Amino acid sequence: QKINDLESKLLQIEGELYDINLTGAREDAFRNPIKLYGRLLALAHEVGTASADYPPTDQQVEVSKILNGRLTKQNQLYREMLTTDIESINRLLTKAKSEVKIVERKKTGGA
Image (cartoon, rainbow, N blue to C red; front, side):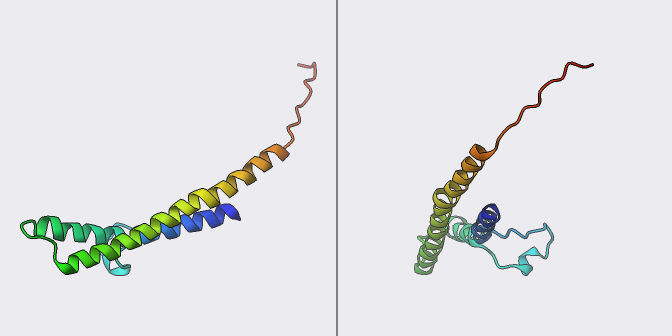
């Protein structure tokens, strides 16, 4: 159960970064909203390529702050998961390994 919960958390974090349901079809962009990674790429394009001769606008700076805040939140959730959830699973696996008894068969002297 804990591993299933961990997988769900991972998918939730990953799903905030980019669309995990992409199929490669042209209609994908219409099915699900653009996620954080796509929004950051769009902003980088606007600031870097589309208006390279001008400083970022106030709106672009504000969007950057919002997106960076969201990225920081996902990073914190990921780090929490690494330290808390994975450590918990490692402890369970270690405990389970120590409880497993290996029984060797005796070899018989036949052909």
